[in-house]
Length: 470
Image (cartoon, rainbow, N blue to C red):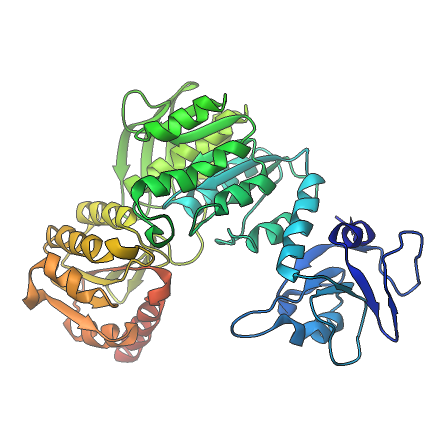
């Protein structure tokens, strides 16, 4: 789908800068042959430029997008948005703005206005956002063309980039929205304007930015002001429920209590999937969830509640749900020469850690080794929450715990079994330490916030076991 570049340049109040000549003001009646008329998508990484892309040169801590303007044009960019005049000769037409980041945001807003007929679902929450997004996208994708956020591109950069991927002929869209501080969900939702808004869960997370669990509720609840019709929230969150009612929205709840609109009737958790029996206003249904865990069952309920909220049939949506695939290191089971590795190291919070502990305690069939790391962005509550996590881990009586991160001492204090605990300096050190103690039939749980880098532990473990067996 092509968007009009001239409209965007006028909206940004941009100044055209051309090779060998400059136009001090944008003039909608002036169409030099060298000026492009349309763009196809928004791009901030020159490696992802395709013909017709509009490249935004974003300054950053590690590098500056202005260094790659020529590269973007070489790959077919129709124009570039810059906030400083490049020193070298321009390889193509540029739009000069005060802030390329703000310009990207405004471009996303303009694109969203052109997608008015797409029925949007917005998703936020302390944990489970990406899983619920993938479930919803898979379920709705079985009913009509659907475009969704890729990976977890859920911030002020990811949202406009996601919107530019829409063709305009979608029936449904699914937008994931993340936050670290107050005001961020409000801003994202003001652009996304979802017909259906979902809050997946409320747990201690991002406490550095919002201070407390009530702060988490307030921050996630900012979405409600921009939801058009239906508010989908956990049955255990009366504050969120009331927010929706006060806004005049239809409220649907999900969870395990008898009062939940979408509730778990029964759940059989397997190693790689779970079988769910659910009850909802449309009746009772069976669903196969393609990833394990009771927490994932509730994420699936939230996704199906959104399908129902959009007035769509649940039977085919459930078939689509079964095809969902979670990106990255989320609820991923690997088998490495007789060892079962549960790789869930993309993110971690107290809530997600407890959920994973509960699942793995039910399904493991051999000795359990835990490779854990810090839960980030918990602010002043970090020591206490890591001590509590250590106490929860102790209940599973693991054969060993290897820990990577600054909160190793707090976790160890809660764990209380020093003979089974090792603090490691890096993910690679943890792999080197653990491998000699692993035996056929053992289980390894890998869980931490993404910034800890425990994906490197998994890579190192695979490398070491491969070398040991050759």
